[in-house]
Length: 192
Image (cartoon, rainbow, N blue to C red; front, side, top):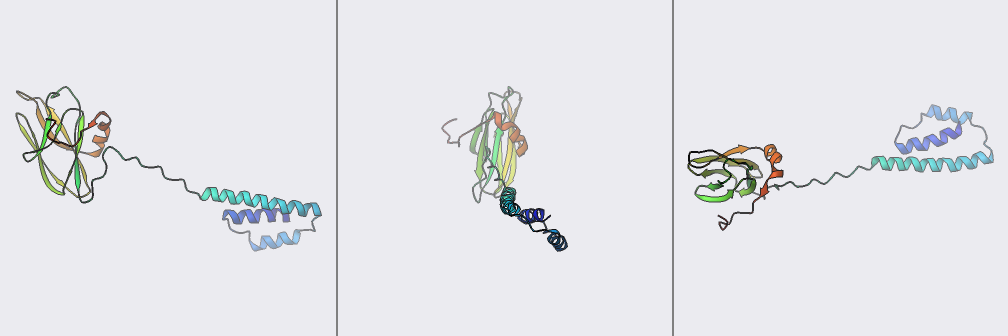
């Protein structure tokens, strides 16, 4: 009984379990007999080996796995003090020849051919964007600092040419489609 007590107590302490109650320790001590030389030597070697194993188990159990690195998606967070709008357009046959020229007021922000997207960094506050061909479509957005909004451009059939339309979208819709979209570089006006 003494040998079991000697082996279990260090292992229990190393694993963080409650110590064996004092009454159980006293009973074990009373039942112990004088060990032989071989038992003493075996007892001295056994607890040390088992204690090391128990300690290694504790260290392994306590080590927390490192969190996997989060890959940054196709749209990084906006710069400090800014907001951003992701304009995108899926590919399709309807209006394929029409490019949505996204404007803020009369200034072209970027052109948006089928199967493309671009990220427009802007200051927080109200913004009004438009696209036009034979008809004009306006979209007013309130951009907040640190916010990313999504706008989808579609082209519907018109009388003489396609009619572009801007509509608010969400991150989930963009995430479902981004694999089939190519990112446009910032607009310079040279590539009209």
